[in-house]
Amino acid sequence: MESDNIQEQVELIRQVFEYVQLFKGKTIVIKVDGSVMSHPFLPMLVKDLVLLHRQGIQILLVPGAKERIDEVLQRYNIPWQSIGGIRISTPEAIPFIKMAAFDVSNRLMTLLAENNASAIIGNWVRARSLGVLKGVDYQDSGTVEKIDVELVRKALQEGLIPIFPNIGWSSSGKPYNISSNELASILARNLKAEKLFYISRSAGVSAEHYRLPDAVPVSSEGVATHLSVDQARDFLSLNDEKTHDEMIDLIRLACKACTEGVARVHIVNGEIEGVVLKEIFSSRGCGTMIYTKEHENIRPMRLADIPEVLRIMSPFVEEEVLLPREEQELADKIDNFVVYEVDGIIHASGALIASKEEAGRGEIAAVAVDRTYTGFGIGKRILSYLVDKARRSGLKHLYVLTTQTADWFLQFGFTEGRVQDLPADKRRDYNRLRNSRVLLLDLKHFRIKL
Ligand SMILES: CC(C)(COP(=O)(O)OP(=O)(O)OC[C@H]1O[C@@H](n2cnc3c(N)ncnc32)[C@H](O)[C@@H]1OP(=O)(O)O)[C@@H](O)C(=O)NCCC(=O)NCCS
Image (cartoon, rainbow, N blue to C red; front, side):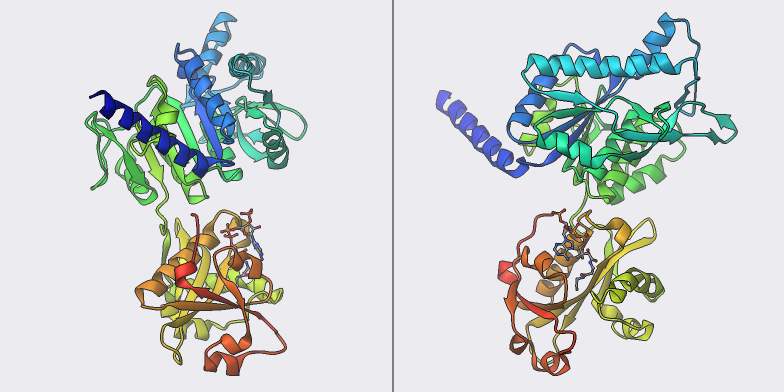
C-alpha cells in the first residue's frame, strides 16, 4: 500500500518535471477576481504563483477591484450606479476608484514580497473613455486602447512580476476605470501568452445554469470542463438571452483571446487549494477550459474568398515576397487553397499543390497572413494544416520556393535544397531572375509546436 503511494508520488513528480520543461519561458496572465482578493486562500495562491515564477514561467497579474471599490465608495458616501454590468465612474468617484484599484494591487505586491518575489505596478495601459453607449454616459469608465508591450516585456525579462491595476490613462494622463477582465484578455493577446487564467469564486460554466452545446464534457460536479473555441461561440449563441452575465462575458473574452493566439483560457475557482498548479501540472484540470483546436478556423477556400485572399497577398506581391496571382488562377486551383477565417473575416491563406510529375511530392505555396494578424501563430497553423493535408494525401516530401521567408520555414524542419532537387516541371518553370531559394521537407522531419 505504502509503495503504491510512493509510486504515485514519483509519477506525479515526473509529470511536474515534464510540464515545467514545457512551460519554461512561457507567459501566463492571471486575473484574480476581487472576491478572491479578500479570501483566506489568497496567500496560498500567491505562494503557488511565485513557485511557477521561480520555474521560469513569466507571470502577469491583474487583480479585480470591484468589491474593494464598492467598499471604499460606501465608506466615503460616494453614490454610484452600474448599468449593463458597467459602473458609471463619475469624476467625483474616480479618485476613490483609483485608490481601491491600487489598494488591491498593493495587497498582491505585499504578498509577493513576503515570498521574496519582486513585482512592479505600472502605468502601461493607455485607455480612452467608453463614451455614451445606448444613451448612457459612462463618464470616466474607459476601455483599453493599447498596452506598452515593450516596457512590460522588459519588466518580465528583468524577472519582475508586473501587476496591472484596473486603471488606464489617456494620452493626456486622465485616469479611467477599466474592466480588469477585458484588460487580462487584451494583455494575454498582446503578449502572446500561453495561458490566461480567470480565478474567481465560481467553479466554471455550470451545466445547470447555462445551455451547453452538444458533446461538451460535464464533470461530476456539473461543470463544463472543456469548450473548443467553436463550442464556446455556440455557447454564446445558445445563451444570448443572458445579458450582463459575468460568465458570458468571460467566455466572450476567452474566445477572443483564443482566436488571437492564446492557447488556453482557464476559468477556475480560487477557493480550491492549488488550483493553478493543478490546472498547469496535471492532465486533470478543474474548472472550465476554453482551448484552440489545432486547425480550428482553417477551411478550404471558396470562390467568394478569392478577392479577400488577393487583398491579403497584394502587399507581399508588391514587395516581391509572393508571386503575383490572378483571380482566374486561384479559381482554377481552388482545391489547393485553404483559408484561415475568424467571424467571417479571412486572415490568411495557403496552398498545397501535389506534383503532377513526381508522385509523393508537393509544393507549399502562397502562404500569406494579413499584416494586421501576423505574429499570432496563424502562419504556423496554416502550415501545419497543409502538412497534415499532404500526409493524408499520401505525400512524403514537400518543397517551397521563397525569396525572403526561408528562415521561417527552416525552423519547422525544412532544409536548403537546389533547383535540381525540384520536380522536372518546376525546374523547367523556375524563374532564374527571381532566383528563389529552394527548401525541402521530408514529412518525417516536420516539427512544430502550436
Ligand atoms: C511568414 C508568415 C507566413 C508568418 O505568419 P505569422 O502568422 O506571422 O507566423 P507565426 O505567428 O506562426 O510566426 C511568427 C514568427 O515568425 C517570424 N517571422 C515572420 N516572418 C519571417 C521571415 N520572413 N523570416 C523569419 N522569421 C519570420 C516572426 O518574427 C515571429 O517570430 P516570433 O514568434 O519569434 O516572434 C507571414 O509573415 C507572411 O504572410 N509573410 C509574407 C508571405 C510569405 O513570406 N509567405 C511564405 C512564402 S510561401
